[in-house]
Amino acid sequence: MEIGILGLPQSGKSTLFEIMTGVRSREMHGETCVRGLATVPDARFDRLVEIYKPVKASPAKVPFSDVNAVGEKAWDAVRQSLSGAEGLLHVVDAFTASDVAEILNRYRKLEDELILADLMIVENRLERLARMAKKPMTPQDLLHTQVLPRLKEQLEGGKPLRELVLTEDERHGIRSFSFWTIRPELVVINTPEENPAIADVFAKEARLSVPVIGICCAIEAELMALPEGERKEFLESLGIAEAAFGRVIRASFTLLGRIAYFTVGEDEVKAWIIQAGCKAPRAAAVIHNDFERGFIKAEVIAYDEFIACGGTHAGAKAAGKLRLEGKEYIVKDGDIINFRFNI
Image (cartoon, rainbow, N blue to C red):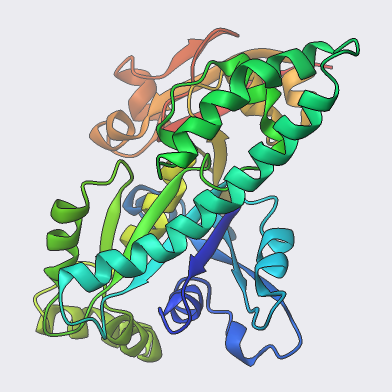
């Protein structure tokens, strides 16, 4: 799991990266790609830590990558560095913009570059396939001859591939191309301090199929510079319940279809990240492969039910809320789980 951060120069992308991860990428001279982990804000996890007071607390984290590239080969550096990113966080500068039309132009400038990059890949592949017309084709070649013309039409229309309806087989067949615009995208509008609502106006005007979040990086940077104890007071003075960067991190987490379940105890409270729709044995494998191989049952209680039962397993068991689930159980976000296994 990795989110690549993209943005035009001076958009605030590196500032946002630093706010979320604490890694000062702009000071890491010579490093083209800087990676950092951002903690996913989760009140449920914090409450479990309060209850168990564990020796170790391990919240869910999202890996972000920031690319510092300039010059003629900047795009090549971005492509190489973010080739493995599952999702994109597109930062748009509204801080220095005069109106929504200008912000839209800034968004489209980078988005059009990504669309053009994908179109070049499709056209090159179609040209190679045309030269193979009289030769026997592999099943993958045949799939490409059927799917790529649709992709070309979509891209030539200025539309990203993520909006195109594709089957799982088709998606699997084109996975090796690492198309930019097929990846999930989160648009972050870096707003001016005096006009945070410009992000909502942009979202209404742009009518994008991807989520849009507004954040004032200048305010958020000030916030992160404060001692932790003073941050709440600072937010309250602005009439803000939560720092915006937390919403960006959470949105990035869900952008990739991830959820978290918890294991709890006095030694450690930990959030384990899995793909939504994951069955219990596969969810157990993120702890250790042996848990999946020797899976017997999963002792499960939903977080809300756990809290309603006094925040104890004994209370949950007495209330009949602690249940045993088998191999077909689909783990839910916020489940508290203890796996039974034997190898």
